Length: 246
Ligand code: NDP
Ligand code: 8X3
Image 1 (cartoon, rainbow, N blue to C red):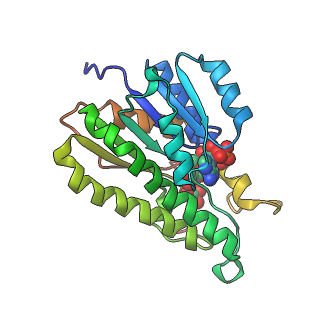
Image 2: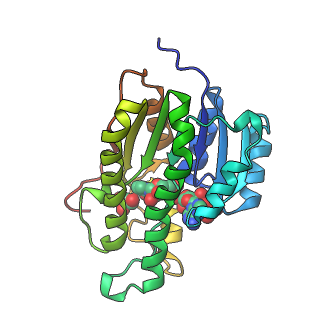
C-alpha cells in the first residue's frame, strides 16, 4: 500500500463539523495539524483531546488577511513546514429568497467563503510550494453545481471556490502542488443551525444527512493519493439526496 508519510496540515473551521472531524482523522493517521477557528474554547478542547504535540491551535477569523498571516508567522517550529491546506471554514446565512436577504449576511458569506479561501491560500502557498508535495483541498458544496431555492449567494460563493480551485490547479500542477475540490451534500454539522439563526427549523431539518466523518474521510482519501495522482473533485452526498428536487 502507498505510504504517504507524515504531513503538516492547516485546517480552517476546525471548531466544529467537517473541520473538527478532519483534524481528528488526520491525527489518527499520524499527521500534525494546525487547527483554526474563532472559538478558542472549542480549539482548546480539541487540543486537550488530541494532544498538544499533534495539534497546534490558533484563533483566526479567515475574513482577515492579517489574522491569517499572523497565525502562520506564529507557528512553532514543529508545525511551521505546512504542506497541506484544507480550506474548510464556511457558512450559509438565511433561509429566505434573495430579495429578503440583508446585505450584512451577503457580505459575511462572501467574505468568509470566498475571501477566506483566498487569504489562506495566498499566505500558505509559499510553504506548500517549498514542501515539494503541497496539496490544497477546498471544501465546496453540491450547491456549486445544482441550484436550489434560497441557495443564491451561498451557492454562488461555492461556485467561486470551485472555479478558483480548478483554475489554480492549472498553474500549480507544474509546481508540485495538487488542488482538490470536495463538494459535500447535506451533512450533520452545525451548518444548518448557523444558517437558520433564529428560525425554528432549517429547510433540511429531518432529512437524511452525511456524517461529518464521512466528508473528512473523503478529504483524507484525496490527501492520501500518491504524488503522481490527483483527485480533482469529489462529490459526496447522502445516498438518498436527490439533486434536482430536494
Ligand atoms: P459547521 O458550522 O459545523 O462548521 C463551520 C466551521 O467554519 C466552524 O468551525 C466555524 O468556526 C468556521 N468558521 C465560520 N466562519 C468563520 C470565520 N469567519 N473565520 C474562521 N472560521 C470560521 O459547518 P460544516 O462543518 O458543515 O461546514 C464546513 C464546510 O462545509 C463549510 O465550508 C460549508 O459550506 C461546507 N458544506 C457543508 C455542508 C453541510 O450540509 N453541513 C454541505 C456542503 C458544504 P468558528 O465559528 O469557531 O469560527
Ligand atoms: C450545503 C449543501 O445540500 O446542505 O452546502 O444545501 S446542502
